[in-house]
Image (tube, rainbow, N blue to C red; front, top):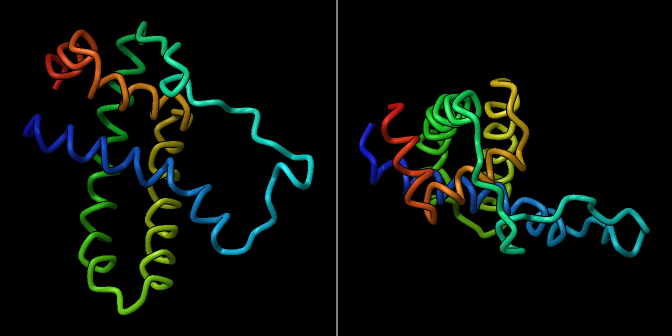
Length: 135
């Protein structure tokens, strides 16, 4: 797999996964904070406290999940770009996001771990080298 393609795909996938709550919010869903059901997950990469001590098994799962995520992304990217309205594009993005989440969870990986590894791949040379050596 081309390393630049993996980096771009991981970054795009991370952006789609991270954007899902914001897009759902824009679709008029109730604000979780207003309903008293705030998210208990905080992005460790955003807080600067990211753990980059991933096991080889987690990195292998990430590589496998990333391959599936890339397939979903490739299936949807043209449809999203060709959408005739912002609403349709958002609908397609949410659909693609749901499929990406399914792919990741079917591997046995949770989304916060996937996102942490994707972020570390793009920002931590040691993590990138470990993943690249496994491919």
